[in-house]
Amino acid sequence: MLQQWFGWPRFQTLRSQSTQEPIGLLAGAGRFPIRIAEKAKSLGIPVVCVAVRNMASPELEALSDRFYWTGLGKLGYSIRCFVREQVPRFTMAGKFHKVELMKPLMMLHHLPDWRAIRFWINRNRQDNRDDALLLGLIDEFERDGVRCVSALELCPELLVRTGILTKRAPSESELADIEFGWNLAKEMGRLDVGQSVMIRNRAVLAVEAIEGTDLAIRRAGELCKKAPFVVVKVAKPQQDLRFDMPTIGTTTIESMHAVGGKVLAIEAGMTIILDESETIALADQYGISIVAR
Image (cartoon, rainbow, N blue to C red; front, top):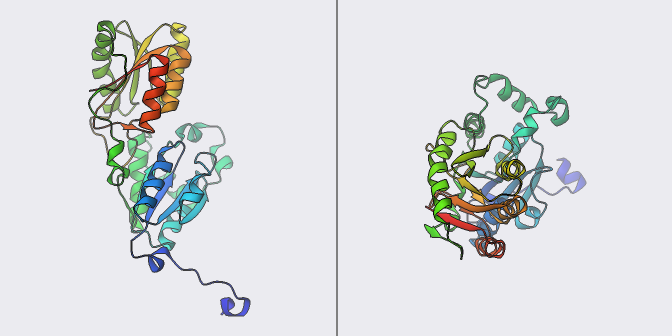
């Protein structure tokens, strides 16, 4: 009735406007969400993007059919956006800065809604690791009929191929560091601590934790004062393809170059490489070797 009186447009979901069912995109920081939105758009799949403010790129708005900003604590609002648009499935992409949850007065800063408060209170408080939190969040969406799927269903071509990707191959000493670091990184993944370790001369310089790969790389560089070292980044043995896939790109290479990293070893078929040609070209420019095994 109010719509008739005031001429307000009746809300139409994308399901009523398109023959293809929309996909939801819960977007964090970085270029991965942008690549997902671009790929969906090229396939004619409508995109409903719920982007985390102060993390996700504003560029996503132009790539989305419907776009909503949300806060880190607005779980209920995020779910309602997808439900309102009759989104049957969504994917998570990009970095969600977990360190925000560790800051003093986190609740006051992010002002979580009731759904987020209930989730935070009822979660398993004995385990705040990434997998436990993200699987719990997925369950919240699925309770309202919104199923989480892997972004790789849209972009399988982003997975890295086996081989030496750069002009420079690792030296014998660097290969030994890769071998030394590989099982260590896998064990850190099994424990759900992080995905990366930094190695020099068969010694561990740094282990990635809550700070993320780029900051862990920079910490390693500070410890060995730009002496060359190896970065090993792998998938968890129990890797869920729907979230937290190992991802590299130009920012990874820039971080390594800034502090002396010379080799990046990644897991073929389980690592996403963004802007592949630009990333490899930048590594070649800096004399950094990228090897996928």
